[in-house]
Every structure is written in C-alpha cells, then in structure tokens.
Length: 511
Image 1 (cartoon, rainbow, N blue to C red):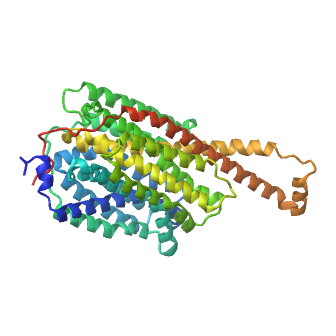
Image 2: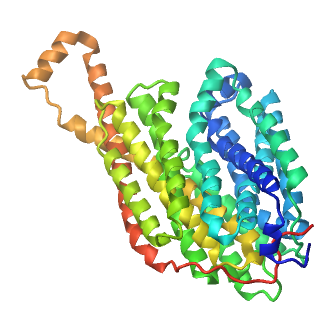
Image 3: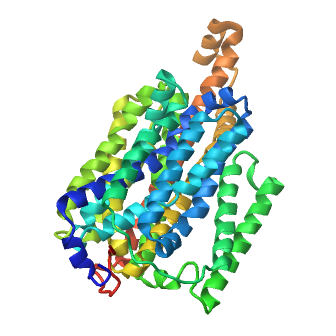
C-alpha cells in the first residue's frame, strides 16, 4: 500500500478497523494520562508500606516525570525510524509490565526503577495516539477525532485522584498500578490486530541534538520538581540544574540551526505558523488546566475538610464540561471559524477562574461544581480545535515529530504551572498569615470575649483560623493570576490561519 495516497488509504479502511483502532489508541491514552495523577493520592500509603521518608517518596514521582520528559521528543524519531505500530506495541507492553512491577514493588529502589521504566515506555503513548487519530481520519473529521483524543488526555488527570483514592481506601494502593494491566492487554491486542504500519524514514540518529535536548528538558523538570522542596535558588542543586538547562538548550538550538545533517528536531516544524502558535496556546493550556487540577484537591481537603471521595465527586463535573465541549465542537467545526471557538473557550475558562478567585471557606459545593463545569467546557472548546488546527497545515512527514513536540510543550507548561502556583501559594500563605496576625489586637471586643471563653487552647485555635484564612486568600491569588494569563492569550488567536490541509506524496499508511 506504500504507493497509495493518504486519502485512499483512509477510504480502504473498514468501519470496524477504524473503530477498533480508535478504541485501542484511546485506551492507551487514557491509561497513560490517568497514571500521571492516580498515584499521587496513594503516596502516603506507599510511603508507609515501603518504609520511606517523605523526601525519598518524591523520587517515585520525579523518576516518572523525568523519564517521560526525555522520551517524549524521542518518540517522533522512533516512530519514523522503526514504524509507529512497532513503537506503539512496544510502548504498551513496557508500560503494562512496568505497572505490574510498581504494584509488586517491595522496596523503594524497586518502585523508583519501575516508575522510571513506566515513564520511558509511556512517553510515546499520548503523541502517537494523536498522530494515529489524525492519520486514520480525513481532514474534515479531524476536529471530531481530536475531541476523542482530548477526552483521554484530560479525563484521565481529572478522574485520577478520585479513582486512586477510592482504590486505596477500599482495596490497596497496589491496585492503583494493577488497574493498568487489563487495559494495556486490551489495547495491545486491538493495535496488534488492526493497526497498519507507517512508512519508515531511514537516516542517521542525531545524538548531539538528542542528548542536548534531553539534558535541557531533564534538568528543567528536575528544577521544577525539586525546587519547592529545596527552597528554589537558595540551594546549590537548583542552581546547577538551572545552568545545565539553559546551557543545554542553547547548544541544542545552535546545533539544530547549523548542522548539515538532518537534526533531531527539524526546524521546518516551527516554520508552520499554525503549529508554532498552537504550541504557545498548548503551553498556556498546560499551565491553566494542570495547575488548577493541582490546587483544587488540597484546597478542598485541607481547608474545607472534604473527604477524598467527595473531592472526586465535586470535581468530576469538569470532565462533564469537557465532554459537552467535544460534542459541541464536533458540530461547530467547519461552520464557525475555529479561531472564534478558541477565543470563546479561553473566555469561558477565564470566567471559571474568576469564580474560583472568589472561593471562600464558607462556600457550598455548588460553586465548586459550577466553576469546574464551566472550566471543563472552556478547556474543551480551546483544546479540540487547537489540536486540529495546529496540524492542519503541517506536512504529513513531520506529524510524528510534531505530535511529540506538542505533547512535550504541554507537559513543560503543566510542570512549570504547577511549580509556579505551588511556590506562590507557599510564599503568599506566609506573608498573608503575618499580615492577618498583625490586625489582631488584645483590646476589648468580641474577639477577647471569645478567647476568654475558650480558655488556654484559644490562641492555638485562633492561629489555626488565621492559617485557614491566609491559605484561602493565597489560593484565590493563584486563581486570579491564571485568570489574567488566560485573558492575555485571547488576542493571540489572530496569529492562527484558516486551515487548508497540505498535499504531500508521503502516504499515511503502509501495509
């Protein structure tokens, strides 16, 4: 089939083949995306079971993040060199095996090794699933295909904490990892049976480009992950990681622009205006979506006293909003300018963040549900057309690399956003606690009478209340910052062009 055009390759595929491939790659996407957050709530139980300190437990998350960050850009080259189907099958096999090893781990080194292996194998699943769905659907159906893909990418992190908490509470933390095994087996069988291989792109591997980019991304992820624990740039480790990240990225850019050989990441990717602008947008989406997901569970559980299950219930409507957006976008694309849909999505996201910036300690669950529903709707309206329009004008032979870079930029945005809001939260809590404490006086009044009635424990209770109030204001400030970041992104939609799919001699599918 190597001589076929992409269009004829799509038309030759039966409906059942199309459905099975879509289901299989979606399961792989959900499995990988779910694993980014599902283990977080189980960490205290894992820590006790493995007899590890809190500082040591951070490596359970860090090892996965670093490995995935390094392997994500490599997935595009691997798919071009060895074929997307082979890479997909090996990635699912490795990820499923690593998940089982995580569940079987008896010591901390075993767990860290298994998580490292899991990150290495899982990095290709998200970008490759996006590339597959773009390839097996004609351009006019790309929006609907991206809606399905985004369902896996976004629903996983949203449901992860609640599902992880439920499994840990009712069964055992090991089931958080065992859950991936049957899903991985099913996805493997579907891809093995129905997916066809893609064309191979032979050529020498650019070791200089790969190593410099890996060092830059790995150092940056280490900096962002370890920074909150080590008080950021006051620690020598963070200073070294910052220097390494900047120096390695500089070497990578210089090498890519000056090498005579085919570079690890081809500059032609960033000559496409839609792809370049789309990466700016997905960076912002990564910050806003994942930073919000990181802030809400501790806010609801620690400040408002919600149990884990209730936290999952009140944050679930975010996923409902995203599903609703996918349903709407699939019918609006082609009838309404994609740029207008993206702008409306950002405005809805800004509205939800405005609502979150006015959360209080005495609010009901309805405000959490409403704001989450609106944010899910807004994020979906941005994400779906953005994922389609970013690749609409990109040459098909650049798609493997493009989807890998697209996922990498989103992941960097999420890591940067989470680190930034957590650092701001910690700093603002301390500053606000001091400011609120200054306003308290020992002079007669309602406060003095209340303190006298409560006896010796009154000052402790008062300090606890000041802590809660300071934390609530600090959370509001974080949401307010993301509100302005979202609004500043809206004018950038004018940089996007109406998409006219490119013609290419590169076939979509091989036998």
